[in-house]
Image (cartoon, rainbow, N blue to C red; front, side):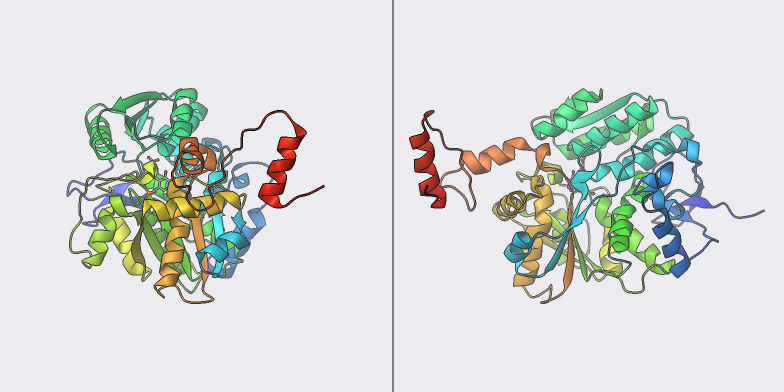
Length: 432
Ligand code: F0G
């Protein structure tokens, strides 16, 4: 009998499950992860294969996720793949952002350019594709907004009913609107994200809905392609650092897996270091890091960045491994630092939601602390789009006293040219 191409393995005890086993936990409580047996090309030949698929006009390879299908879900047939397509997000230079961060060689991987405006689409295309393969009749997630928005869009593609548990009062407006518009049955839970997550897990176990939270290993396979795509955009020359905002730790875990596999499959020889960033008021993973990962922590989360307002992250163990394997670090930034970074990113024309700006704020902090060295190349991941959280923009630019750095207040005038002239002269020294 030949070994299956893909199987699930418990990350804690090593027990093996079939690829189509729908459970999300091992009996020991550990989370599952996918392992792919690969007998095809590696190294330069695999790089060439992925490169040849760039710019495909039809089929799954138009997607910046399915282009790497051997490393994501090799067993999915073309007609099973549910894709927008997604991915193919830009890797951008913004000199004003790099200068603010401390003058390093900084690139921004903008995941807000995905179809629903966040990186979640990369995991969801794989998760919902797999949900259909295992015959799911309904899909669900707990979410701070982006996962639910993405779930809704892909469930609509699949023709499956979707449910989302979201913390009432702590979901940014743009995301809540997406949930409603895409037709997600939206359950506003009187509790925080961690309560939503417990409810979602119980519903998955007891009510038969297929759970698409980031504990779902198929979602993490899709999210690995953030890393694979940025490596490809750099012609497979790894940066020194990849800096990523961290909440439920799905991305941190999948980045570690992507890098280890990219090395094992010969795509790269040197591993970038991962810097995972939490908001200071929601930093259980950073607390564990400071104690050498002696134990997971649980906190009462507080931050304006609702996307990462999470006190009890699900992918803790897998993320610890990612940090250890890449000689990574975990750091924190204050809400003020994050919002100032966001104002700089927004004003550069790139724009992002508050949690995303944590990556740039942390880059600045790590440079100031000498952890990121002068001249090192950094890729900071912007996880979500500016329009996700319009209220945070209004609050920063119009409603905060005294005006914070870079505040850009709209100016009210009478419909008179003299008023325009006065404003131009005062603001920009523009004179006729
Ligand atoms: N950035 C954004 C914009 C997010 O939406 C999230 C997570 C993160 C960062 C953190 O990523 O959880 O993989 O560590 N959002 C989840 C959601 C929780 O429900 O949309 P993580």
